[in-house]
Length: 169
Image 1 (cartoon, rainbow, N blue to C red):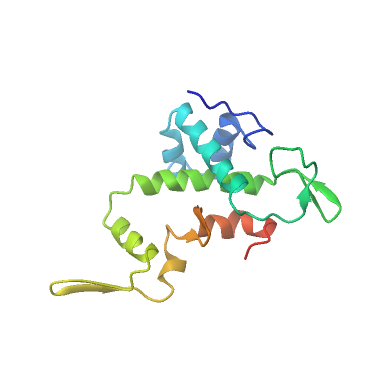
Image 2: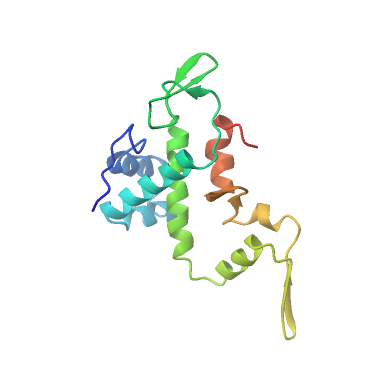
């Protein structure tokens, strides 16, 4: 594999720390736990790297400012005149965003088609005598809803893990 994780240069945590975050935060029966532990170390590395890059290179606006402009990463930051390392909850959000992508990509249920229609702004779908109509708040309530302008980050991940440290609403 060609990706090598270097904490502070291209990621905020490595596979060992990610494994520990999963162990500390999920039961062995939860889908996040089983999905993560079904992956090879190479796949885990790709998820960590890719999702770190999503929050580093997209228009995620964090509170405060980078401590050093030469730093390749957005964290540590100066927030309210204090140096702040990347919060553990943000690290967990990065990891869970990647796990959720994996879960979505392997979802074979009929719900996947509904979720795709909702995300694509379809309000009503009809076939012969059957139809489905989505409520106005369907996108906001969709489990696979993405952030407007940040199409690689799930809305619920942003709301639960990133929002308190972000300037975005």
